[in-house]
Length: 171
Image (tube, rainbow, N blue to C red; front, side, top):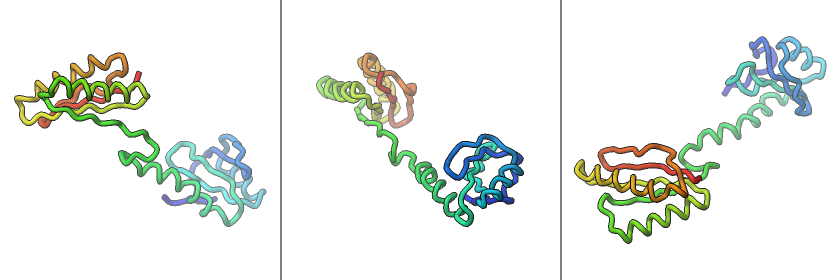
């Protein structure tokens, strides 16, 4: 992301932060540049994603380095999607369309335990063909009904050719 300094900033108004991190509010670009000159500092635009853009007064000559340093953590966080950086992982439990009763009870207890501890659960039922798709959806509907005290559906039951899935969030 390019860093804009002083006259490179074209916005008519900016949200200004002072040299010591104090919030100076929304001021005109000209006033912000005048304050930067009077305090022998640089006016640095830290993001172009909002209007008016946030700008900071920083010590003369350290503008680009300070802006890159403040922008770096947000860029690193944005790169972590499903990789699970700061977000809590969703526990995935897999079932077959024709699951035995004792296996069903075991998986049901696991899902209940995760939901009651405050963690979301993704329930996935594999179907080997179109004929098993209805059975897969029926297993999920039964699971959702059995877990209604511990969790609520975050997504509807999603059905595809290979099976069905639903995500439950803790209550």
